[in-house]
Image (cartoon, rainbow, N blue to C red; front, side):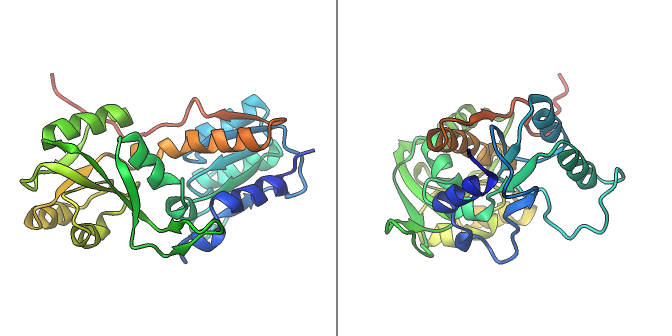
Length: 266
C-alpha cells in the first residue's frame, strides 16, 4: 500500500528540501502522511479548478510545483481562494504536496526540463550551489548551446516548443548561441547570465527596467510567461511518479493553464 509518506520520501530523492530557498514553503501542506494513495493528480498550481478536478476524479493526492499555502493564512473560509481550496481538499480527504524552489534547483527539475524542451545541448548549472547525493551539481539556472541562429528564429522555436500564445522580448543585438534559462521569475539573475557568457536568457515575469538593463548589456531577453516556462516539469513529475509507483494511477491535470490571455484587435 502506497501512502502519502512514501510519495514524500520519493520526492525528497528527486527534489530535496535542502535545495529550497529559505523563504519557500514545500512538502505536505494539507492532509495526512498515513493516508493511502491510489490516484494522484499532477499540476503546476493547486488552484480551485485543479482541486475540483482532483475531487471529481477521486484523487487522494495532488502534487504541484507551486504551494497551496505560500503566505500565512489567517482564516480558512469560502471568502478566499486558498480557503476554498483547503476546505474542499479536507472535505474530500485529498492531500496536497508540492516541490517549489527545490524543484527549480534540482537536477532534472524545472530548469533542466525547460532547457531540454528548447533543444539546448551541453546543459550545465550556472553558479552551482552544491552536489546532490549522486554527485551532480545543483542550482537555479541552466545554460546550454544551440546552433547559432537569429533571434527571430529562436523566438519562433521558444513559442512553438512551449506552446505559449505570445512572447515579450528585447533584442540585445546578438545572434543566439549560448542560452540561459530560468523558469518563472528569474530576471533578477541578468548579471549572472551575462557573466557566464550567455547571449540570450529565457525566463518570465520580467519587469520594465529589466528589459532596459538587458538591452544595455547586449543580452537577448525573452519572457515566455511564468506558466509556460515551468509547465514542462509537470510531465516530468508524472513520469517519475508513475515509474516509481506502478500501482498508483498518476494523471496530468487537464484543466491547469495560464489565466492570462493576449488580446489582439483584428
